[in-house]
Length: 93
Image 1 (cartoon, rainbow, N blue to C red):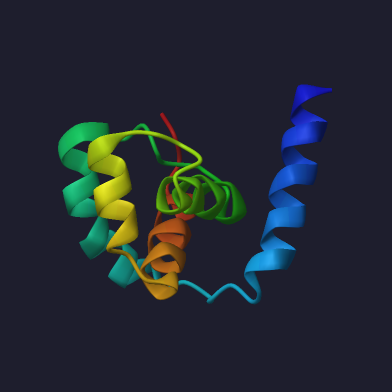
Image 2: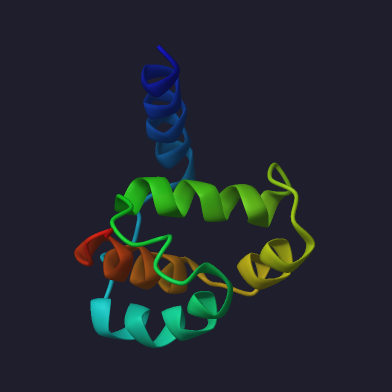
């Protein structure tokens, strides 16, 4: 039930955000170098929509973490799409 609710919230939220950029995995890989300092490979394998939804929550203050909020607020829609595309293409180990 929790998974269904999360999927509905993410899907509904994406409708409100408008079209999502098709991400560039090469650009996302470059951006991910900063993320790896703290997260390592923890983000790999995330679905595009899930990654973007979480980052949007940091941008709007729904999720609270000082460093993540600061980093997320500095990212454009294109940056988020690029990171999401990259992380979706690498497998979580």
